Every structure is written in structure tokens, then in C-alpha cells.
Length: 294
Image (cartoon, rainbow, N blue to C red; front, side, top):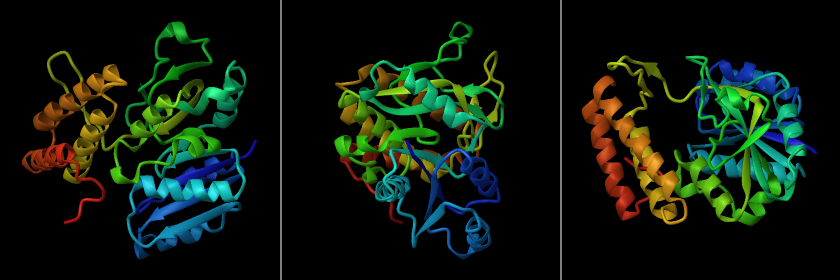
């Protein structure tokens, strides 16, 4: 089976060069979809062009994460690959990661219902494993666990799944794109496997851990624009999937509200971020989607 990696870039730093180098030895092809980074990133893309089996698709403007992913999927289909492996520009694969994922997949008894395979995520800032169903010690020998939603970065998706469920939802632009896609796959009866032996080095936002009584909350420090999209798109997904996945919606909404409290307590530009959150609530309720225009 052949794998095409898709990396979405937006004003990438030098870090992307090392990430591509680490990834190239595990996949058949890499396509970077750049969302309008412009001349400031020319030197980095010149260096990336030296890598074999790598294609860059240049978008003249920021089309959003979902649209960029769909362009990568189209490229992979044209290349007749079987899987796409999607990444943020700052995520780093670890040695043998793809092999671990595919070996676990081969042991799964109902391969036809598997939509994607996801790694565990090691936070680059803290070194801790985040968002995992396999944290507990009693899972040490477990190859995989079924997960309802996973993040986009590191997700290995069967290409033929897109023919059934459709592409990534471009109306979301950014944020909740991963959750919406995973919930849609579940609606069609697909399963997602989290692979115990596969670890991706990844970072969400600009996390800073704080002290609050006996707790150690982590502030993501997303800017006001991201706060807008997180809020608006969260409401969109909650409305769409509440009846089918009420447990997930309630849990995610609780995490969202906790994030607001942490933002108020510890982050800068609180008023600006709260205003963006309120705007996101209004647009989410009224159904205004797509890219937020100034």
C-alpha cells in the first residue's frame, strides 16, 4: 500500500525542513499545501524543493485548513495512493511510526470499517502524552483502542473513505475540522483506531502550564481570531451532532468552557479574546460560516 503525506503550511519556520526530512523515509510521497505564505517563506520552500518525491501546491491566499487538506487529498488520488497521512507543519514523526500504525491495523479483525489510524501525541513543551485513550498502565500491551475523534495531525486516512463521507468541511475554515470529519465518519459506521506504539511530537497553540491551588491548568494562548473560530465552529458541530453523539458534545463543551475560564485567569488580551468569543457565539448560532472577513 502507498502513502502520501499532506502537510499544511502557513508561514512555516525552519522546523518544517527537519519535519519533512524525518517524514520522507516513511512515505511514498509528500505534498505540501501552502496557504498563501508569500515571499517571506521563499527561502524555506527553495530548500524544500531539493527533497525527492515532494510537491508543493501554492495557494495565493489562505484558503483555510479544510480546503488545503482537500487539495492534498485530490493530489493523492491523482497519484493513485491508498492512504493519506495529514500533518501540521510543526508536527514531527518518530522513527518507525508508520510501520507501527500499519502493523496494528493488520491485526484489526474488521479492516473494512476502519477509516483512519491515529498516533498518540507527545507534547513538545511538556513531554506528556495528550488526548490518549491508552494512558493507563493496564494498556501497556494493547496495540490499539477505538477513538471517536482525533486531531488531524498524524491521522492516517484511507483514501476511499472520502468517496463515501466526502471531504473536509470547508465552511469551517479552521478549527473543529478534525472533529467534524471524525464524527461524520462515525455516522457512516466507520471506526478510528488510536495506535499505542505510534507517537507524534506535537504542540497545540503556545501552551503554558500554571498553578491554581492543587491543579496545574494549561493555557493554550490562542489569539483572538482563533478564539472566534474555536467558538463558532464548536457551536456548529454541537448543533449538528448533539442528538447522535450527546456524550461527546457535552464533554467537549465542558472543555471549551474550562478553556474560557483559564483564558480569563492567565492569558493576555482577555477583553479582545472575550469579544471574539462572543462574536463566535453569535455567528455560530446564526449560521454564519466560512472565512471571517474584516
